[in-house]
Length: 408
Image 1 (cartoon, rainbow, N blue to C red):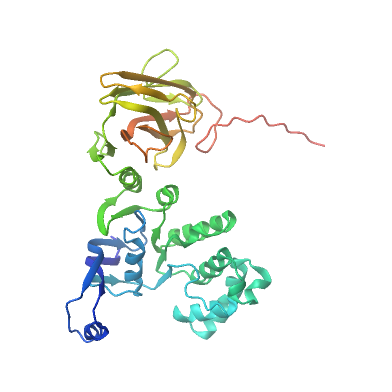
Image 2: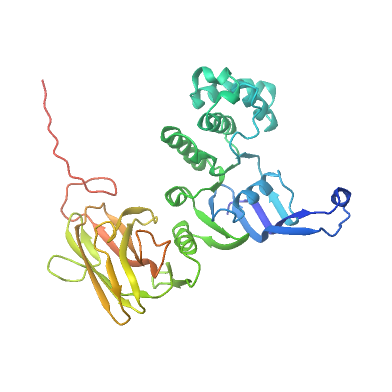
C-alpha cells in the first residue's frame, strides 16, 4: 500500500476579531483571549491522501477550498486540528504568487525558486527551462507590472513545476490565461501524476476533475460533505448548486453499486426512461452508429407555468458527451397541471465509440436547472455501445471519414 502523503484530522479555521490589538497578541504566546467575534470558514475536516494520488477539491465560492489549501501549505495556521505532510510541496494558490511588481519575471522566478528551497546552483540550472516553458519572450526580463494576468500565471506555473515536487497543489489560478498554455499545463500535470506526484487540484471544471483525479472531495459551507469517485461527487455537487429553497437532494445506490443523485422540488418527476432500437425493442447494448430512440415519461405533481426537458449523455468517467434540452429546440410546454403526464421521444444515431455511457435528465423551467429545478436525475439510464460491424477506430465519437490516397 502507498504511504500517506497528507493526513488531516479535525481541521478547523476561524477568523477572529478582537476589540483590542493586544488581545490578539496574547494568542501569539499561547494565551487564549475571548474574541469579540469569530467566523468559522472550515470545521471538522478529516481526510488523507496517499502518495501518488490525485484528489480534486470542489465546492461553491466561499466553501473553504482556498483556505484549506493555504492551511496545507502553511501560509495560514489552523485554529484546531492537525495537518501532517510528507514530502516537498509546490503550490500555486493565487495569481502572481506574491510577485514583486517592480522586479522582472526572471528575478521573481529566482526569488520564488529560492523560497521553494532550491540552492543558487539549482536555480541557475532550471532557469532556462523556466524561461522556455513560460514562452513570454523578452517580457521575461521586463518588470512584472507590465504583464497581463495570463503572463504572470505562465511564469508562476513554470517556476513552481521546474522540478517535480512530491506534492503539487494548484488552485483555480490556471483558469486565467489562454487555452494553449492551459493544455500545456495540464500535460505537465499529467506527466507529474504518471511519475508519482501527489496532486491536490481545485477547479470548477468537472471535466478536468473527472479526467485527472482519482478522488474528489466536496466542501460546502466549510464542511466536508462528500469524498469519493469524481463522477459521483460532481453529480452531488451539481445538485447542491441548484436552487436550494424547497429542493431535496437524495443519493441512491443502484444495483451496480453506483451512487445516483436525485434533486429537485418535485413539481415534475421522471416516471420511466428507456432506450429503443429501430424495431421498437428496449435495448441496453447498442451498435456504433445504430439508430435509437430515447423515451422519457414525466409525471406532473403540481402546477407548472413552464416545463423544459433536458438530457445529458456522459461517458464512463462522467464527462459530458452530448446534451440538449427543449428550450434550445423551442419545444417548451406551458400551463401544466397536476396529474398530467408528458412523454418525450428523442431519436438520434448512436455515433459514439465503444464503452459504457449514462444519461442524466432534467425537468426545469428554463435552459438551466439552476432555476426552478423540479427534478435533476443523474444515472437515470446506463447503456453500452459496442462496435459490432464498423471499421476499427479509436475515440469516443464515430465520425467515419472518406480518405483519398494518391501517389506520384
